[in-house]
Image 1 (spheres, rainbow, N blue to C red):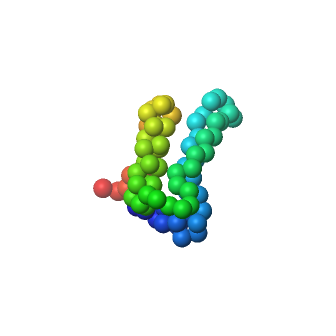
Image 2 (image 1 turned 60 degrees about the vertical axis):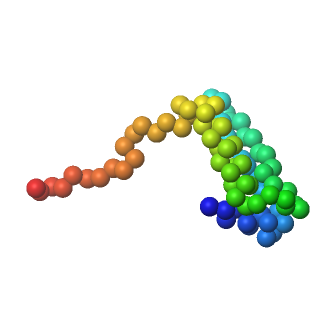
Image 3 (image 1 turned 120 degrees about the vertical axis):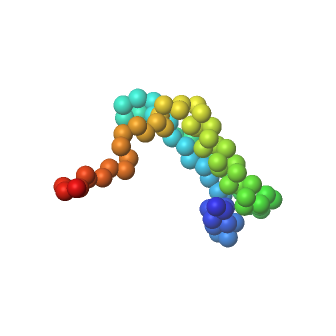
Length: 81
């Protein structure tokens, strides 16, 4: 999926990565980093690979913040049968 990188290239915008980490109740730290800036020297695929690496690093820093243990796909049991 290279859509965001292509959009940045077409609009001559800086492609950014934004990550957030919870510090406590109502407290967060936001980190914003440029992924690519004009003029673009890397391919859209490389830009998206850099995005995925940064997202993976966030999960590895605090895996417990990404655990989702409740029933995500709830369904109602049929009344009959």
